[in-house]
Length: 376
Image (cartoon, rainbow, N blue to C red; front, top):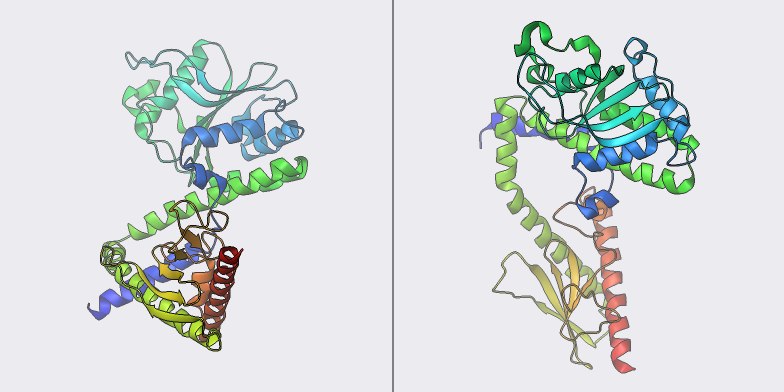
């Protein structure tokens, strides 16, 4: 690899580190696999905007409209009687003629006087053909005054096809649309927590973590695609990532084995042997043998560090795989996604000693527990 390639990778790492520093751990939305679905985001935002949905609803709505310029807000009057509807049907889609109509609005908010806030929510989907101009024409035909809001991760403008540029004088004027970013939504979420109860606050904070991750993902993608050099650097990193991961796993297992050898030095009941799994070369580990009981404990890294025993003790061992017992929390030593402990391990020599010592203690404690169960 040439020196220029190394420099490009270094620059990419620096940019990526700055972007990734704003993210947090996995959220409930990651667990259920709905983090990038627009309808999920619309449902959360719609719930928080609904004055009748929770105690802080009216104030949450009033804080939200502060994000909209007054000249676009019109006569919208938020109060307890405001209605919020998801997937509002404006009639069948018709793209024929000079005034296309119809479609489903992601979030439709209507005050008691009939003025509507129309929120088109985009996470990764592209604009539909004539999408915003169809909403505008439909509501105009209904004689309903309205404000159009286009919500995206980065606050980008709608496409020409959504405005209906090809319609000439019948296209939608850009100044009639307010663009909002999810960064603004995040600021709004931080503000409205003061109006919400503890349960909703906890959910909002989970949602904010998800938003941060989605924004980070888009920023990383944009950084990688910002130039040919950045894209090439990312490809080089991807090509070598698995080798780096395997090197890390082997090093960690070697240090962990030495630490366990030291801790078990005076306990002649246990001996350590090499681990061999010919069916999976990516598994790295060693085996602890208990001479009095005949039990064998495999200490292995696949994606995560875990202990496997040659007998099944269902009250202790992790049941997803029958005999696996993960050390600590499931993601505490995650070498695939670089959990906090793994990141700490790579920080300094002192941190490496601390992390391996903690892992070794947890392994010994787990083994003693299993031995104790066997002797009951």
